[in-house]
Image 1 (cartoon, helix red, strand yellow):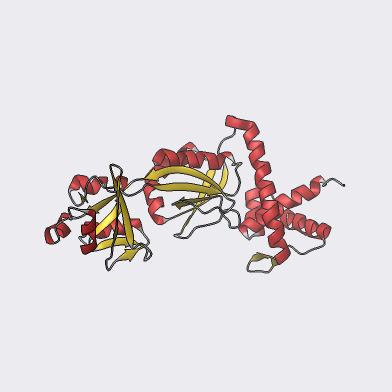
Image 2 (image 1 turned 30 degrees about the vertical axis):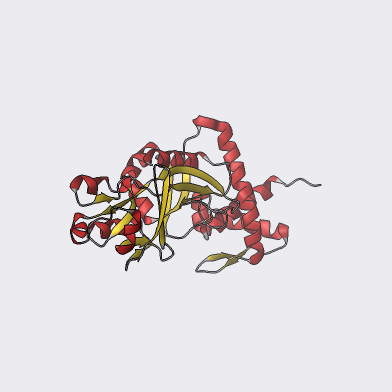
Amino acid sequence: MASMNPETLRGIVVFVEVARLSSFSRAGQALEMPTSTVSRRVSALEREIGLRLLKRNSQKVELTEEGEAYFVRCQRIVEDAESAHEELLGTRVQARGHLRVAMTADFALRIVAALPDFSRRHPDLVIEFDITPRMVDPAHESCDVAIYIGSPQDSGLTAIKLAEIQLHLFASPTYLREYPAPTQVVGLHAHDCIRLYASETRWKLYRDGECAEVRVSGPLMLSSIGLVRRLAVGGAGIAMLPASLCREELEAGTLVRVLDGWIAAPVPVYALTATRMMPARTRAFLDFLKSQL
């Protein structure tokens, strides 16, 4: 079986970067080579394979059907090779390059204050954030790390647990003056409960080994936990929120705990990556997230 020549390997690396960025010029900048060299190496790779991998026009660069399949395989090969090289270099390698991270707006707000310090400690690292409520797949999208709140499905991705979020019940004194706090979990049924997503119709709570479940309802449902907190402060109802997210409101007295002692099951926070082998830039960022959580 013939071995792959070095020029083909270089062409694969260049092709993967062009496919990632959908641009010959941006790939050239990332690889520190002229755009003409990038184009020439991709063309040479296409001639060797005998298939067109990219559709080019003046507006954008897109993968062909064959190019999409080739990119998925080659991306993992390139990333694993980069990771293996950095692993061998160990602590002598600084976090550097371009890191693409997908997370929700609520999660981004949680870490934004500490990001300038992280950037100062890693001046050669550029982080591109995709702020989105959907679950991003790092194996098939232009993303290195996706932050997922909850237990991820078995998708073949590498899931790294970062933390667990403890949830409590909160409401504003304004709301509770008009609608007195329930003394038992079943009493939540009579209150306006601010929910995450329409599918959240039951709350399960625990206290000292005891478990209680109640059907909840209310006119407001949101996909942002930050907005749920704001509505709770504004007197819209009872909300299930992370205690760590409500410290300032508890100290200011704009939120108080409801059914103190009852808590929901902790919600895990995971970082999803395409492979187990991660470059130094990914490891540094995940260490930073763990320190913030």
